[in-house]
View 1 (cartoon, rainbow, N blue to C red):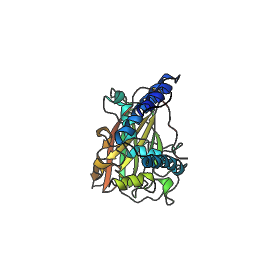
View 2 (cartoon, one colour; view 1 turned 45 degrees about the horizontal axis):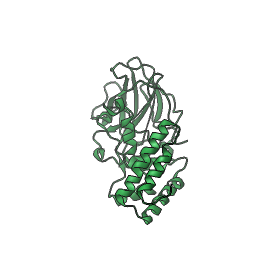
View 3 (spheres, rainbow, N blue to C red; view 1 turned 90 degrees about the horizontal axis):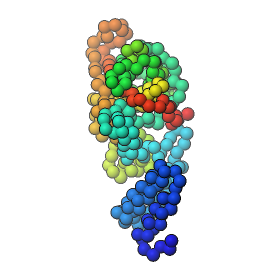
View 4 (tube, rainbow, N blue to C red; view 1 turned 180 degrees about the horizontal axis):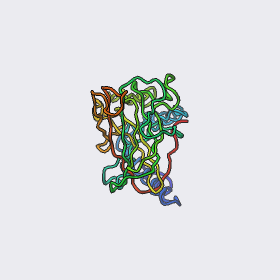
Length: 297
């Protein structure tokens, strides 16, 4: 097709996209071209801006390593990651869900840990924390025998793979739900932290006068056959940045109540105030049990 006017570019490209054999790929590509060409017309993208855009795409690749993914970081900072999560869970976006973002720090093969044990594996000063997570199905019935990975940052906002002062697998553990569907563990309360700002995402945040912080949270990944793998983060309800999470991840269903206690624990002699408790219910949906690709080695 010989192009005679700018409108014909879209017509020609859509005609080619419609030849795609795979129906889902055809649907995606037709929609992508329709919206992408519409966006370019809407903002009247200049040639210089187009060259800048292609340069940015190249920079995404250069900044991505085995321990850092700039494109995923940008997707979160634009709300794309959260939107995809909510559209694909909670009855396809119709109801609340405890599904949430995987984040960049999940690791395979966390140490097997018994209920009521501690996941503090090296000297990690901070406020003690007792956590109980109850894993249920959508009817509220407990799910027994689910494997639940737990990981979170330290009280200074660093994961163990970022911090040479922490032992390998510090603040990580793999639990199995008991006959009540519960896992219970001791730890230290995590802190919120800034996402990396030394790349494209940092420049975007600076241009928009946005802070780079995530509110404090505890990660969990629950796995059991016949259920969709539950990936979640439970956010501290008293974190000052709860409403302005740079990754747009906080939902009502993933906001946990961190209760402060100033007295000694009645059953744990070495647990004196102040300490915190967190009790939260994690709901799994029926589906295929598949583990995600670990974002770091």
